[in-house]
Image 1 (tube, rainbow, N blue to C red):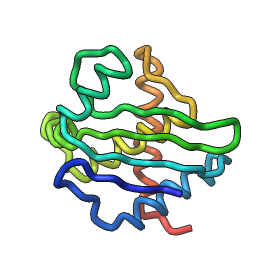
Image 2 (image 1 turned 90 degrees about the horizontal axis):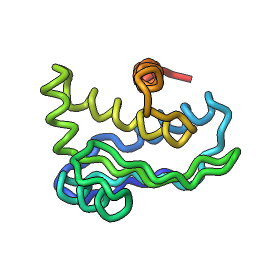
Image 3 (image 1 turned 135 degrees about the vertical axis):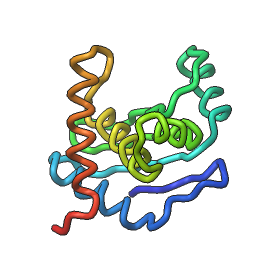
Image 4 (image 1 turned 120 degrees about the horizontal axis):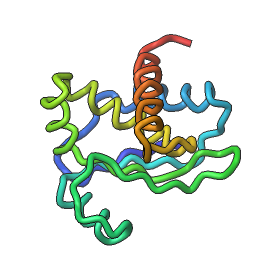
Length: 139
């Protein structure tokens, strides 16, 4: 089950399209979907989580808490809408495209991908783009 929570005035348009997309990603990767929560918030909200749970005193666009097991993907994905908007200007993409990229990034973390090294970051970016292309693809 995928749920969307809003701790800011932002809301996804067409939540069902996003849920369908995420479900197809899980199917493609041969994982079952457990409980997946996307929590959309502002910078300060995410900074507080970063400080409290990860001991990092920096702003970030996403924090993922993974509760998955070998077969079933579950987790909480916190996304700073403010960072997504800023990133969209920096990378000269639409806010919608940047939001999809960040949401895909969270999914990849839940699937076991990491981004600690330059090589891992490059691989994740490549996979993010592949997943984004699946957004409105018919089954």
